[in-house]
Length: 493
Length: 33
Image (cartoon, chains in turn purple, green):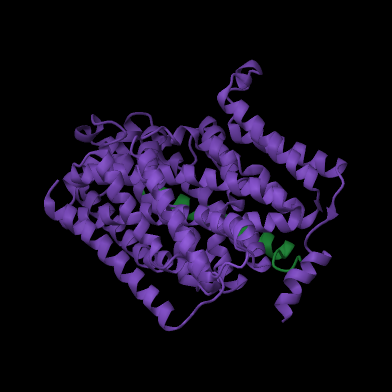
């Protein structure tokens, strides 16, 4: 690919990232805005547009681009359920867990779990959550490496390093505020570029529209690939399985909730939903249509699911639009990379460093520690990700680790807080999840066709309910003496 | 093809947000502490 393209995309990303990062860092310094959690939570002063763009882009990364290209090739428009599942997730976060996090004023999910169940639960959940987010970070690093490698012709290792450097810069200069403002600009760019790309592709097809694509699928008896409501077996295993896996684990995950914790108020989060959900959900439509179109053109069909769509884009679009599109794809992946690096770094600085090592740590100390951890995590992710391990295959296992965490959060806030019950629930579900994924237990029980998420959901609900009933514990957190003393008193002051 | 996928997805998104908001208003997750 030509040198103009490479130089333009990298220059755009660098100028935008360093420009915005430098401006916000300077502004914060000039205003002496040393609020609580300025670096990690933007002083809890982020507005609707920043929160909306960041919520939408945090859960829009490599799988939304590379994944939907590939999935639409194999299963048609049913692949759109990947995007729809994320919309359901955003609705749940913005109308429930995100609001509760903002209200309690905590800096991390493990911190709230200590208020509910004590320090032991905080530490084990903090470690597991940071680990599971790190798994996603390596996935985003792979996406960056593959995209840069395809664009520049560099080997995957060098591309991963270059992507990692951009990813670090995206967040390390001014924290979540920097990520947020770059996201606002990138969300606009992403939509302009995918809409233009879709229009250009349509114009180059016979009749200057997608009718030839429709004809291709209909004549091959694949008309059900053109609707999001595909074959029932696919809806059951893929669509419904994905919704369960995401909806019952991710509403308790730090990256999305950290964005909500940074909002100016609970109303900001609710308003942001109306922008974030469509931005996140509709992006997949364009990717899916491009993927379906690539398969309908014989010249690109022979290339196979992994490269057909990207090759078609490079060959059919004018250079300036390819630059814009690759820049926007990189922006989407970089934004997820930034939040998945910031979230575990926040867990470390807040739940390990400040909680157990230096309780009197200032905002400056926290920012420094968070920055160092972001850089270390990104370096390790680049080292792991550049070998392209098959992480996507283990995403179900990674997501299921957080299912009992969401249970503890909801049951502790609204039902009962039993530390023993919480410990038993967490450890049993984690053990079952690992045995189910890495041994032949599922085959012995003749249940290998049942998605991992269904089994873990049943295990979480069953063990969680029984232990909560049998084990001694405190009443629900909302309305409790501790809550009134810690949160309500603070709020009225 | 494009418009079918576009409208089906948009319809699902609007439906999900509507259902979510109705549940939120009924349960009042903003006032249940």
